[in-house]
Image 1 (spheres, rainbow, N blue to C red):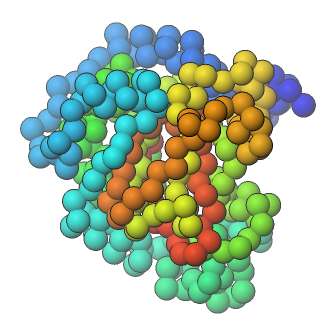
Image 2: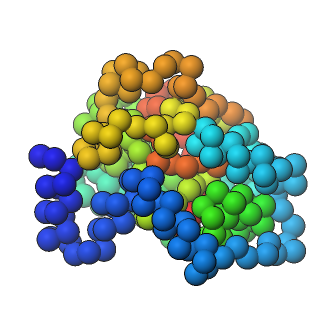
Image 3: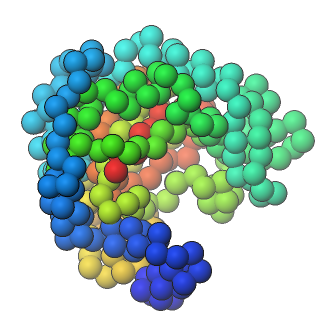
Length: 282
């Protein structure tokens, strides 16, 4: 079934709230939305609050995202990383499993299974926005300045996620059920959007490193824009040269700012778990 037929069907079932998903994948639409929002919302003067990223040059960061869809590396302070880790280890978690939504704590998980034997591949901190440190990261004045420079307006809305990806040899189908994004895809979060991601644990290609195709936020075959947002590895690697495949690895606290309309995925955690803090701006 074509993207158009899928979109029309979803709009009939779920209403016009799905229009951002249908249209936000097109660069022209995003540019028009950015121009309109620049007039209606504008760029706000950054607050005087202390930044966590004093070494970031805003103009260089914006230019990097425009060119390659990513700016890196960033580094969260050690005390901030420790606080995020403590929250993830103690707060209530939720996840999607084969039998439906599960509610649990980090201490309940042993080798990617709950005490009842249910396989659990992810654990999302419930309502991460309730924690002051999460909002402090999201509202960092330098981060907001970069997002404003890229989007064309200062975002006033964002979603905050802090989640575990547990180590397992589970098949791709089980990961799809768990909504684990281990297949190449591009995001369509709204009419315009960008996101920030920070590793809370040391992360490499053996425990969930982020993989992306640089520059693919503005370089996709037209036919792919009218189909599924997902593509198989062999299709991606056949179309894009290998030098554009970027695997982002780093110690705890390492982060990056990205236009997530590029093709990207997370490698399946195999040897150890991953803990990621993410902010989606729109």
